[in-house]
Length: 128
Image 1 (cartoon, helix red, strand yellow):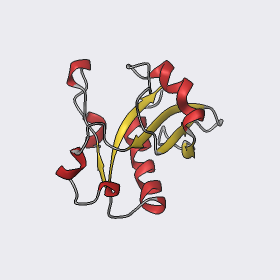
Image 2 (cartoon, helix red, strand yellow; image 1 turned 90 degrees about the vertical axis):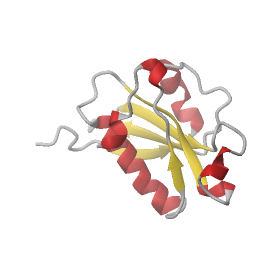
Image 3 (cartoon, rainbow, N blue to C red; image 1 turned 60 degrees about the horizontal axis):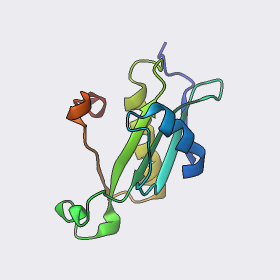
């Protein structure tokens, strides 16, 4: 049995995920971030176990490295889950949000994300 059977992802508002991100993300903040697309990861019992949001890129004109059109590029700005989520929960979460973005944003858009090596992040969740 897959440990993520019954887990699901839903679109949410910034207000819905703010407290969760401020509690569980290592930065403890979403101040200054544009959150265009917000999502929650829910366990089978309907409890919020993860949150993430995508938005315009943090640095001005950085989108030009990826597209000729600024609206074609978004960045995964924050991703966090509670500590006891099942193995591969973050990768599952990202995969589900990409499917939702393709259906509701644009199929040809570019999604950019960075792993913060200063905090020991090596990008493993993006490789699954």
